[in-house]
Image (spheres, rainbow, N blue to C red):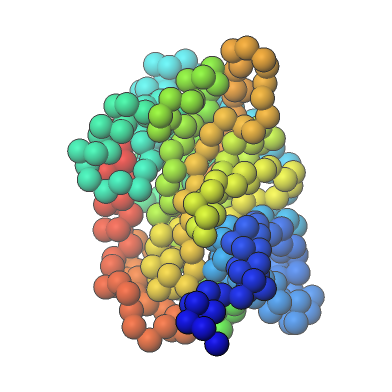
Length: 348
Ligand SMILES: O=C(O)CCC(=O)C(=O)O
Ligand SMILES: [Fe+2]
């Protein structure tokens, strides 16, 4: 056999590799098979499917997840009402501190990115801020940090709905983390005591309508390419579209098209680190939706989404999990130090 033949993979192998690289997909997983626990085999298989998807793309769509359509609809409605409040009311509830990470963030204050140099991030924010408004909500009983609620007259029912939704999302996080534990051949309840203090962040997002041409400037997007920071993100999107996920093999961004009734669930950086990069925290961004709106100057329609960023307990130390390789790639890190550090550089 010639040396060239040795160095060059066979045509069949090349074809197989090309197919693997281009077959990046975000699977739809029926979570009822896990949550309703009808058969142990069904649960185990679902857990394996979720973990395999988290290894491959870092993203899944969950259907039959247990969060009712009525609850999601109400939260979208209350969120829309909130963003319609006058600017001075919203600005009176302004986000102030990464340690609190609560309150209203107006267009231009955040620039999510993978850059780590504060000067570089500040320059990016100046040139191409994220074109979105958000409202950040944390656990409501924190002894130090307080949520920035609008009054009941300004936003009737807002607070209670958000608090209920916070609990619902926390519960779902516990179930999905149990599936991750099983999928990684850990004990089902391995994560329970490390994620029970509800140190999460409920983020309401509103992307105003914008001339599509403005989103075409270099580096500009509704939300720039970034990864999330915690364990998992539960993302509820409306039907507008625009979320894209980066295929780690090809560098291409692939649309995560909205599928009614599903939740997009993705792995965050802390879970990737916990798993020694066995699970993948994948870059994603929000751009103008794929379809062209009109021939001349097109307007990208307003979009709403709701992200629930799940975190380990802030006191939890994140260090290489069992069954995730012999050599830890990262030193242990304290959850709060890590999350607050990441938040501190993305906001102005
Ligand atoms: O709005 C979306 O679809 C995604 C938002 C997002 O990725 C984020 O806020 O981290
Ligand atoms: Fe994100």
